[in-house]
Length: 332
Ligand code: 8YV
Image (cartoon, rainbow, N blue to C red; front, side):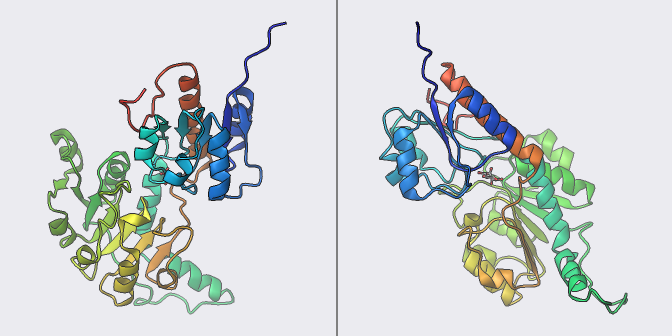
């Protein structure tokens, strides 16, 4: 009797939506993380020694130490997430391990969250909610001069990183009457600039000094680590706000906290932090900071779409084709 070929071992480091896990069980020898507890570096090393395919998330550090223990069977890392700064890409490439991600499917959700923070910080939404909760039995009532925030209509929004998410933010921001400015490695095609009536700044320094709100929408790479350095943060106007739904590492978080505390910057809306899951105490305790626990892509629909993308990448690879979302496309 012919034996059926063994199913490839796919190790998934965190719990994924039920429909995604069910499909993975059907297709692969899926080793799932029922407890959802983040894996230790030792557990990750064990995983790469066994898996044909690894499915990590932003909470797993797939560094050189982990990858150097990978068995020869590990040929694909299919990241559940768009950012791949959790993976040592150079080492993966040198070891001929393909890396894929999940671009596109979390663009709109992340742009929505960015817009929510752009509104929430100048209009003091978190403060208002907290105040009502603290005064549940009766708040002082309306007053003409109380809880005043700042208008966003007509203000200048400077977007750092005009890729998919930055562009989706620009589209939303236009509808709210914000003026669009951006800094990007490449200038947008003319018709896109016209669509947003966007102003391109080749010099990030010059853009920072003139904006009312800054939105960080670029990936974290060696080139963007502390792009908003202590020196650059000091260029911002004291009335400026910063929103970050990309990666905490792009901003010098310590300096940001210091400048907000000393009122050299008006406030910040932060969904990501430099040393997650730790958050700088001074940011958390400031009334002028709206802090969220990395929720930008946290919708049921988004997480299912991300899982579907992971499955498509694995399946395509196992069928002998180039997976669609390769991070270094030349490799297959
Ligand atoms: C994800 C993200 O939740 O995809 C990304 O890059 O930052 C998040 O929205 C996370 O990465 C999942 O691994």
